[in-house]
Image (cartoon, rainbow, N blue to C red; front, side, top):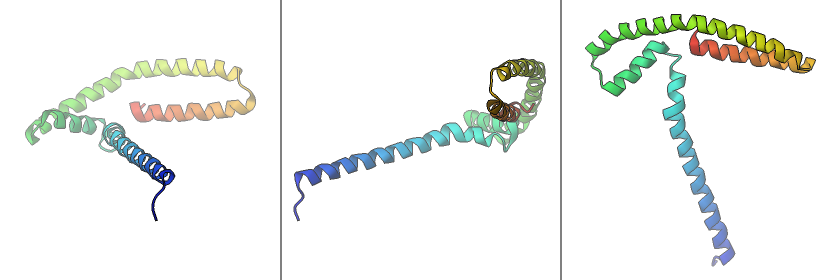
Length: 131
């Protein structure tokens, strides 16, 4: 059975579509692997472990260097965390005041959704900053 011109065009279109689909899937997988996955892994080893992994890869640190640098990284991140506390507290106060003003503008059914939105935002913030 010979293919007609119309059939050839349909097959070519389907081939182009499938090729685009494959390129999109591979591109999405690469973005996830190199840009999103490192952020997800940060929760497992903690901030210091995550930072040490990245530092070790970038600088090709040996075991002795990693053992020497890890306490410095942990101390530094601890000091950074302590320095953030007053800023985070001030941010909490500003968000609470702003949320009260926003709540005044909302209908009752929107207020409950707004409370859920604020709770999710606060939880994400707690995961990021540990506060």
